[in-house]
Image (cartoon, rainbow, N blue to C red; front, side, top):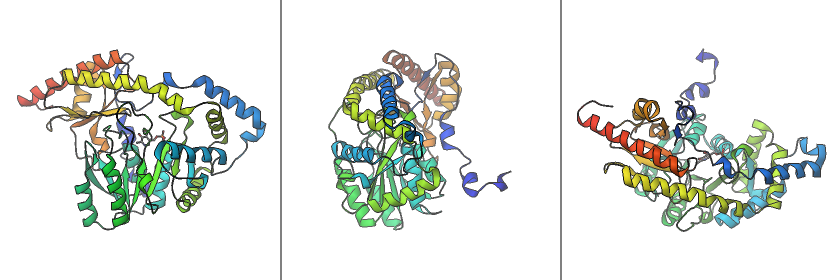
Length: 405
Ligand SMILES: Cc1ncc(COP(=O)(O)O)c(C=O)c1O
């Protein structure tokens, strides 16, 4: 049957995103595998009012076709938001509103990548970005993540060896999947490298405003002088993912080209959603809403770190994020996290996590796992991580006696 499909469909046949969500846990299973915000924190009443008000204001016109670039007023707000939260100088013409950050990743892939074009990604990296870029058949160079972000020495030697690299994809704030934040120094250095080797940086940062401790850092884009950085963010984690609204900040020339690609794909983002979102931001203080969520997430992060500290064996390592949704745990190399999940954690413990392999462009590492803390309460974090630690010890012992897991 494959002959009838375009090459990109066949190439994308190993569905990276689908791979992430395998296995059923039953009703009271504990899911550390999700990437969702906590739905209990959604401002439902305020959003309902905003939708109603948007409909009352514009009547049937709001259900008409609107404009592909998205409401000017909302774009103006987003330009201001980018200034206040990420130190970016932007106006409405520098903003493209997209259907979630995910569409922005796809459109940027479409804009920049011919088959075989060279892209640098972090190892590990956000699986949805790999899934979006896969459609354009690039070649990936992956560069290791350190505790303060991408390894710059390794990056520079890749750039020296491959002068045609077009794009670097990075998640600088509370990285998905590792939770790591790129240091200030490395942010500046990345822009210098982009200027020196002439490539684009895609700064993808949906978790940026979800900082629970430590000091806020300027965005990479704030150091950009010559238009090398495309900044992408989203309302999914700070408000509600079901709105499906994200945005790009870039030079007008890039935005105009991205808009053309978006028109070909979906004509526009639903006007009613954008009008309601604009109304929500008019009537509510989004910063206050975000601040209100931080305490819940901070407490869950602290609970997970505390139980990891208490229970994990010494040869298991994990990151200590200051925000976002995820902690990354590294097992001894001999242990395959996928097998641990499917042979012990799902059937016996009824807990889940995302095994690390899907987050590597070349799927060449199997001993990492992504743990989500934002969607599980403290009590269940304690129960789930204690079980996980026990199963990891069992797996390590089994390997010691030669019964490879
Ligand atoms: C790093 C990163 N980028 C982009 C996205 C896409 O999010 P959305 O399309 O909901 O804005 C996600 C979602 O999990 C993410 O973690």
